[in-house]
Length: 136
Image 1 (tube, rainbow, N blue to C red):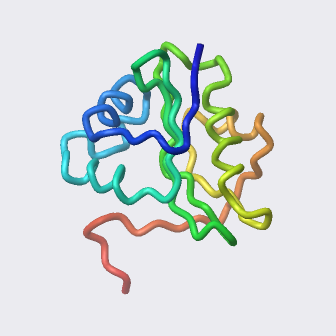
Image 2 (cartoon, rainbow, N blue to C red):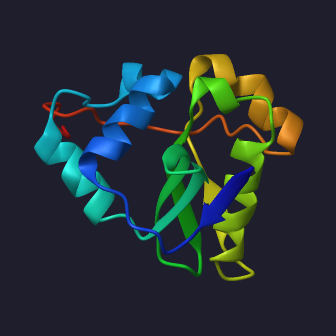
């Protein structure tokens, strides 16, 4: 049985290990514990999924709670994927937000059809400046 929490704290090691057990570690600073600690500490909304004492899912978001919420990390342990854990984490994230708040995310390449299946709309106008790049 999976239990979900909006108020259960996680530590850097638990977050790192979950990222490694999901496909998200390929696109996260897995070798930078300071950065991972800041990611955990500074999230506005952190919904977690637990199987017994093991963290098996997380939805980590940054938001103003009113206009927009960026769902930065949706990670589910590969052993628990395709069981509705990710969907439930997103629904519980939405429950934390105001009624006019838009949920925004950048999908991993392999997850495009997953988000479309859930009812997300693809947006063609996302722009990114990577670390080290300059605004001209």
